[in-house]
Amino acid sequence: MRPDPAPHVPAFMRYVTGALLAATIGLLTWHHYGMERVIELSDRKKTPLEVSDDRGSGGGSVATLERGGGVLRMRCQLTHKIDWPHCKYMFFVGQGTKGLDLSEFDSVSIDARYSGPGRHALRVMLLNFEPNFSTLDDWMSLKVNELEFTVPTQGVTQIPLNVFHTATWWVDWKKVPLEESGMRIDNVTRVELHTGATGDAGEHVVELRALRFHGKWISQGRLYMLLMGAWILCAAGWPLMASLQLRRQLRHSSKRLSLLSEVNRALQLEARELVEQVNTDPLTGALNRQGLRAALMSTPAILAAPMSVVFADIDHFKHINDEHGHDAGDAVLRQFAAVITAGIRSSDKLVRWGGEEFLIICSGTGAEQARVLAEKLRVGLKNTRWSTGHGITASFGVAELTPNDDIGDAIKRADEALYVAKDSGRDRVVVDLPAVDLLTDGKAGKAAEPR
Image (cartoon, rainbow, N blue to C red):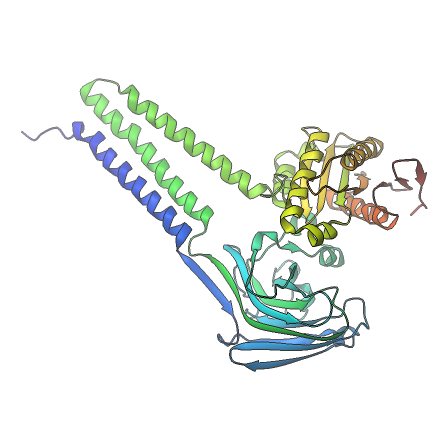
């Protein structure tokens, strides 16, 4: 008589679980220390490129390219004839409408040297082709994702790709709806490296050895999902095998069921943490733009009237980074988000819009209530003791969602009100209403000119 195989089922599952645990540890270790994927743009790789300048848009700057010793050297005679004079490298990394998918890459490293008058800054632009609004005959229709950084005197600059943002000027110019305005780099056809926005006139020399995109052959999110799927299958196999054994042996294993429950709870917690990582700004804990879209889609009642939008921007934030360093700037952003979160309702949504700009979505709130909230936050921020030891203020723009608005219109009007607050001296609240703007500076409110 053949032996009954059922009693051996739990031992078999223990072997499977041990193998899966070893595979999980091995894959996570390999992902952390290896599995590296690099795309390099350089003269050594013969990447198609050109240099360009601002003469095509009415400027007077002149760029020339020199090659030698694996170094691309751009000489730029910068002339302040237009508002934003510049010279740039243009790397062509796509063929027609098909470009590079950089969405699963983690960072970009730039090995460059900069000499010339004034601030030594470069702006990286990742131009993404999106069929909804991009065309082959107009490069300005490509979505512009950008970031500006200061070039160190030595070493390589490493920049996380998740700090890039869609250029606000491009979104306004193309009138892109909110749901399509998020940063996307899944079809990049051009990579550009510009001289900074505040370069002084004179000869600027940028030596570029390489620009490299770094990622993993399997993204962290995909690896987690694969492992989670394997663990779910393993967890699902446990009760199935146990039920066969229970049917033959007529006994119940509470210990195994408890283990299955713990594994399932752990998997659910991990899944929730993955969702939070996707929707949350890792520095401040506020929602990111993806998180705002998810909140609006999952809770459409947020948009029910009345609803107001508050735009907040830290005044002179660049000076904080310049004087105290980017670590101090990050600490200020974290503290700023914490103060705002403590001052709003749990139903309100705090969103990091980009850089030092934050957005507050206030459901069930009219313009006057939102103005009172913004004024309270402005005073609270002004009276806060900051980690830098200096006083920090913020400017606010407020707009109420009207019956003819969508959320993108309200955000745009709040952004315009914020610019009025900035231009009017900062540290104040400006309310954008359909008929009249209201400006308050913490001492006395006054009506602005009707729009």
